[in-house]
Amino acid sequence: MANKIVTFGEIMMRLSPPNYFRFVQTDSFDVTYGGAEANVAASLANYGENVYFVTKVPSNPIGQSAINHLRRYGVKTDYIVRGGERLGIYFHEFGASQRPSLVIYDRKYSSFAESKPTEYKWEKILDEAKWFHFTGITPAVSENAAQACLDAVKTAKNKGIIVSCDLNYRKKLWSPQKANEVMAELMKYVDIVIANEEAAEKVFNIKVKDSDVTQENLQLDDYKNLAKQISERFDLKGVAITLRESFSAFDNGWAGLYYDGSKFYSSKKYQIHIVDRVGGGDSFAGGLIYALINNYPHQEVIEFATAASCLKHSIIGDFNHVTVEEVKTLTKGDSTGRIQR
Image (cartoon, rainbow, N blue to C red; front, side, top):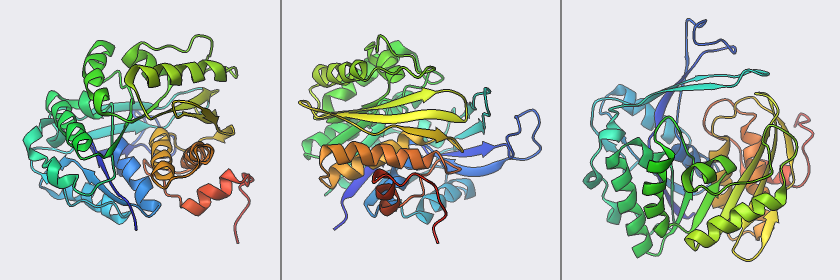
């Protein structure tokens, strides 16, 4: 029987110029929908889990389009609140070669940002759930969203539900000082943390001393120390770290690390030629949650999460449209990309 999993955050309309055009060049935009926790929900739905995404969208055709997009891929939308003025938007310009991707947010005063904490009936939403997931983006959106997030994790903890958090620091939404203040309180109710070196430093001032993500010299021992510091500070059941080496907008090295409080597990490393990196971290989180909730051995957990995310980098849009079988094929070493017939 599939596990009931709940994720909470904002879904936005994504507008991207086609054909690697810059914003100033384009006369049209490609439309899709996404957001960190919605992306995680989509991954888990693809893997066959009973996953619910919770948010608030406007009661108009644009809000309905976002809901339809989630439903299309099997995400349950029963607890989505409707109302408010607008759906948040983000503009995404694809990077190429040495030119980085660019994101511009237009989400102020969105239905989600303006939603009241009391609109989310967490006792009902989390009934019979086994897992709750949020990211550091959600409490950064507004004070109301932060309070709703705190209400959710407190309810989850009272119900014995596992809570996971991807730190996901966004400098365009809040300062490191504000992030530290809010996230430190939320972390009291978290069991599993997902992070990278930037988020750990910006949110909790925990630094990786010798590694440079722009060079091929990531020091695994430094990342093990990072995971251990996070785990010990917040008394966690597990910490997952993503290790990305950024050589250009197209080419990255990609690996993962998992620490269960007593032992470290590191994945194989992938050299990725990127089609779309948005949602890469969310696909890692989705893979990690799926593997943990289904009691995979911890080495298989980190291999599954890293391989799932590797595959996401080949897919346009925020969602990771891959199956469990496709991920497992990659974990077993078939990375040739040869045509399947």
